[in-house]
Image (cartoon, rainbow, N blue to C red; front, side, top):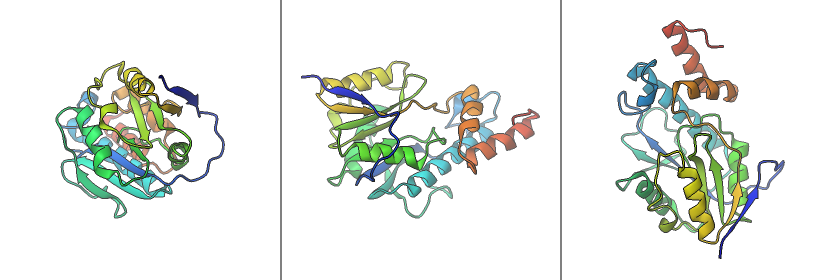
Length: 231
């Protein structure tokens, strides 16, 4: 029996959901993160943008009313880690395995919402929509404009829903959604967001980031360093 898809992009108000949020992230080390930004950004600049995006994401998670907040981290924590967020190490080889383990490692009988570190424009209101949706739906899914996904929430996490899904491809989002539907889940859809993967993404996301965004400030600072006029 196939599942269903419900579009939540026009939802205006929701009640707070009792859920946990986990951020899947890498330590922002130059030469190891955001390598597709080089050029034009030197490795150090690219890592600084990654750190700013991660800091914005974690701050937004802290402002979201949820039961628990965790980062599944590859690497060592840094000054971007708020005290309210606990750390668990990433486990597994491929990204599908690491995502599956992240759900397993934070699950305490409540729904779990997983996001990445590449959408600093995400808001607490949008994350609240995601957690609240899991009171009525089995899963919530946030597609990314590059064909992937920026958020996945599961009322009852199951590693089989993730393992074996090809990651980091233009059809990853479609295949992940098909896995959920094929499992008979009722899926709520969130708006599509842009991941920060390419130089064009950097400017696009910076313009949509909330006021006071560390990422937007870092983009402007590095643009001045590079001699480019980014508003």
